[in-house]
Length: 248
Length: 279
Image 1 (tube, each protein chain N blue to C red):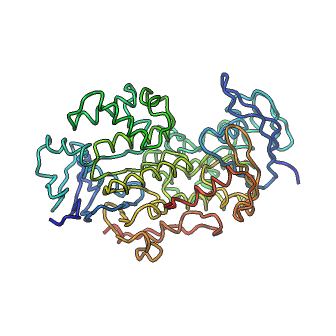
Image 2: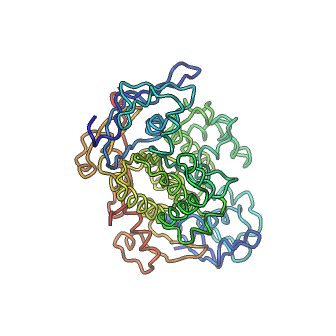
Image 3: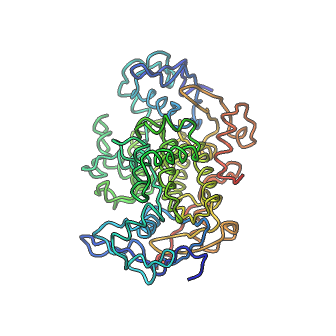
């Protein structure tokens, strides 16, 4: 199978701080791949480096067979879209949902906007009634649905998800996770998903990489993790922590 | 009043004036607390934090608090003067907030903040206050208390900041501690360390604890009893050990909707919110 995303020895440096220290990774086409780690582990930086939002110092990123340079061209952004953590911060507060969804279409010069907007809203479970609302008139879960609709409207093949549900209530999180699984199945998307929550990653992803301090700790399949077949102490600690508080 | 009831809350209501009329954030909450760990769980907007703040006396001035009874150790909290309330707050009733980044004073060293809390409520010399602050930092398992004493909040990690906050809140030896999402801003592994410290200190000092959180599973593993809130009301009160047999569909929904390692369910069950829950 071909790799949708292949990363070799990726280094990201902010001033003198090495946020990523030579990370390599391969995500197969149609796969859902997870990145787990604590804050500062570099998991979000890796995602942002792919999207062209972090300064790459060395290493290569290949997406759908094309090795990326310093800048990303338009076809790249049609193919790769990102959903951010905070739906309160990632939607323009003075644009209606309609306007928000038109933006990517305008950038890429896509004509049948009307139909696409209706379809995109429908796909994420928001009716036509939401089309002319502003972000502040929506709940957190509805906003994240709009953000997902905005990502899907260009019909990408890869979705980069940066903690897409960590700002949401547990019950709303379940709805958004279900939605993401459904669109992935329907559109045969490749997911690269970041979360600090092992349970969410094992639920959503087939394979995952545990990260710490800008380095890969280990790569596992979801079933290895479920069966506690992990080799690193750090992963074991994370697993224990995800089981909740246990009184000594 | 009986010796082991620390706090009595009966029909607590918190009402906010808005442009579109009055909004009741808390609508008739009742519970009582002894020297135990009580969890208050609910989603955003359920009124759990406003309940904690009303007990603490930190409701915004434009809002109105009313209750048939809101008594701490027999003291009617709603009829005492602001001055008396202030004397209680931080002394006999303390509160830990969510994010040490925002709730510690950024321009004061950690040590000075702890000393300030202590000297506000007790007449102690500067030297003794410093001594006790250092001992308290030690108690929250900060390895090098003398160094941390002189650091500013931005110089420490989130876990360290939250420990410092716990130290600050415990130094006056409160009888009731309200912890509002004390670990939500922390990484999972750090979260457990902080909870362990909190658990130990609460047990040692025989405090009453109100643990406010959106995380039902975390609360049930930490507390003795859980109050589940929805839309400003208590929908269920249950022993944490019996949570598995929870009756209310909202409680069960909250428990069920989270992904769990080793329990594959696709799609995840979602909450089917019924209007009568809020009625």
